[in-house]
Image 1 (cartoon, rainbow, N blue to C red):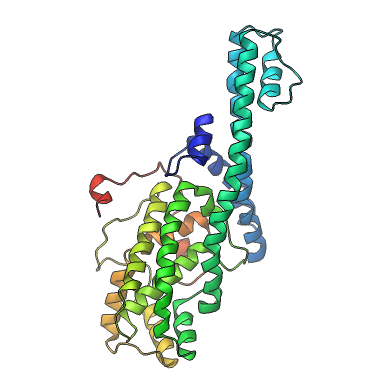
Image 2 (cartoon, helix red, strand yellow):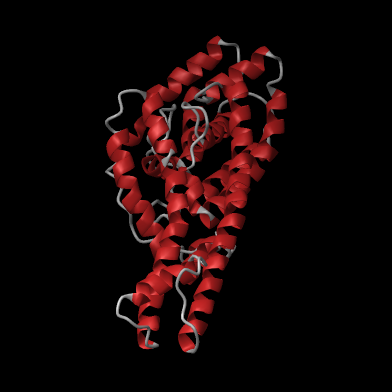
Length: 349
């Protein structure tokens, strides 16, 4: 239990902790049961919004319970008497309440050790929560800003149209470095503290995952379809984004293709792309004339993150959004698999 707490809170890298994993899987079931029966989006989001924080608060309770049970055979072996006193003594020691304690000898030493462990777990929790909510706050900052740029839920077409009307279409490129940094921090924080994956936005129609999908689609459309000078920062944002999503998927053991080909099929149909193309053209956004080539180029960018985005949507169950969570029902029901470790060749990509 102490190792589980240290790996979850202290170790600054993705570590699989069986207790944490089992806890999140077990607690998820009742929340999903009631969420699937909710009649409104607001009610459904309210239920799912409580899942992450509730499980997070149950983690220290599981740690303390595990330590308490683990010390029971130690007290029994050291001769705690009468029978059953081991449970009372262990609970008193780990909570540092002191209502029961041995007077001398090895049992007293064991009680001191357990009390120190109990205090350590409390200290870890105190330091853990501010760190978690610090990452959450930084994540939501850009997601909230996206609403003013691309609507709620965000769409790439709305983003381009709004910037075109404000005569700031070329200034749109100023946002890519911020989102590249956002994806870098997302990969680090959501694999080190995986509970963040299940922390939802304060707006019922907003999600970090659908926001990420909208930004990646916007970067892909900007690189493939908009008739403005090429900007490498948009393409770097796509790479940063799909690497972050793949890292999170690997942590949760979600299968995805690591080396998709540009000609591989994607979940978006050409008719959907044509609809966005016509919407942008009607708004006066400058577009490349060869629509078929634009579609091939867009599909070549989208294939890098298409499947992993939809698989993560099946895990997170975000509110409906264009080209991401609106098509996750086509996926098989989520199964919690063993975590996948990239091979040495994949890590060199």
